[in-house]
Length: 305
Image 1 (cartoon, rainbow, N blue to C red):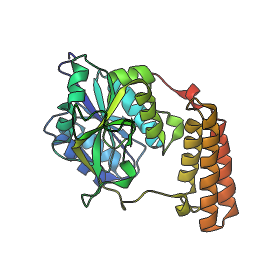
Image 2: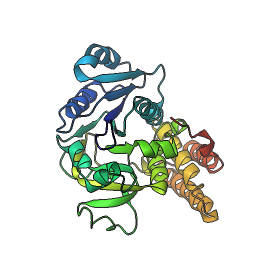
Image 3: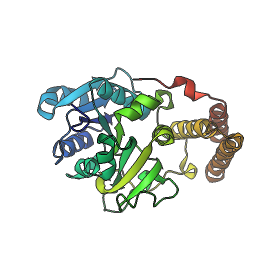
Image 4: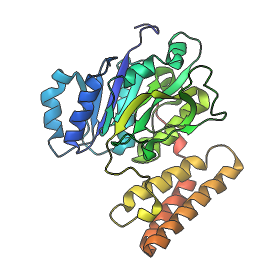
């Protein structure tokens, strides 16, 4: 299709959340602005997800990418963006399997002045993102975008919008030009902060926007931000990913000061965990992963589609 009539593909990454995935796919299928394909990346689920996907792929218009391993959210979005790009998508609308887009969510993104300017060749947009609500209608605290100063810089084009520095992968629509320029998410991040790093990469090169008129619901168990006071031996693996990933990309923003900002993040959060649980083993594990991140040049792992 031409730039004036673009293909929009959705990408959903899933792992062992069979019923939430069905609700997500139904919500995508019911959009007032239809997607061309729904790419589902399954991270080797064991709860019947794969069997259901195979049986219902044609009915839902699914393109299946059934991995033989669990690549985490980062690995799943790496595959999904790559495959949607390879199939000719002009825009790729990404989300987790516990996201429920409202019926006009995609239409609000595609009718925004930023989308219109992009397809008209007036500007190049890296990504557009949605308002993410929790199940009670309040803003989902996990998915608040980081605005770019001046935060009201896009009001002249659309009042209910913000220019963005970064955003989560909960209803984030990435342009083909963005993927061309910055490549794919870092699959080695596995989980947490992969979306922040990737959308930062996009906003460094392109204008990126939050569109408040586009609304999705994030069906998480609780509406709160995870903190390092929550760390225990069962969930430590997630926090090890976070502290390593954040340290890695914060240390490589480009200024000499950034290394020390990243080191401060590692020390502050490792100590916050220790104050909460008094577990020396957890403290040591977080410090080790954080230090690894400080010296990890993850940028050498950026892949092209």
